[in-house]
Length: 357
Image (cartoon, rainbow, N blue to C red):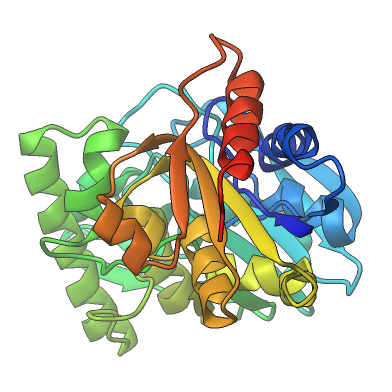
């Protein structure tokens, strides 16, 4: 049997590569004669830079920046074998939250470090703790966001309620920007970034209402001052609206982060030589089917009639939902004690010992 192992991260516990190694140990235990091909994947969120570096990286730099809440932090910038550079917008788990004040300044500072004259920069859009519509990233490259008295607004999405004018920088941005987005959600509305993700970023009811109004104001000013319509723009809500900001302020092309990574790591070629695919992530839920890597892996496998199995830390989808998304079988990694890698290993072993066809 030819087994393709292609998991995403198990957020907060295992990187994609660590999860892949655990799955490989379980696979060998269950199927000693299997031929394994290990291809860790990502979707533009946490772990994207690491996955791309492992597969096609040339070098990586750590750039000192102001983090989302203003404290000194760092951003990894990978240079790939084709010369393109990749910046991650995701932040480490358990960082202190500031739902109204957190910004994406660190992304813009990393972009500025690369220069603005030539080349391609790919920004992984996902895993932020901000909901500022990418205004922090823009400010770091010379954009200004003013109130009705011509004063610069404070950083963060909450301040955008007072946005009166957007002023572009004098210097034209020259780098070609691609936003590799982890989910395809709108900027605003019931399924937008505020309602779906801001609770995870510490926003209560009052903060959510404030942020929704703030992004409405930002959307209107982008339309009036820049002549750009981000309402209904695919991927606009990714990264707390960073997708919309990259498009409006940097002319970025927004794409599926999972599909971008799968293409770059050679997933299609690996899939063509597989009998079974094993994927997984920390939480298999509705967002897994809205552009996350395991959902894209399952979709690609199903299109070729290849069974796709998944191990997850927790499963919030019904069987009808995950079967409809292309998964042949799904199992929670619940046994194995407190060691996350051991749980994933045992789950993969047990899954592959069953009749997978």
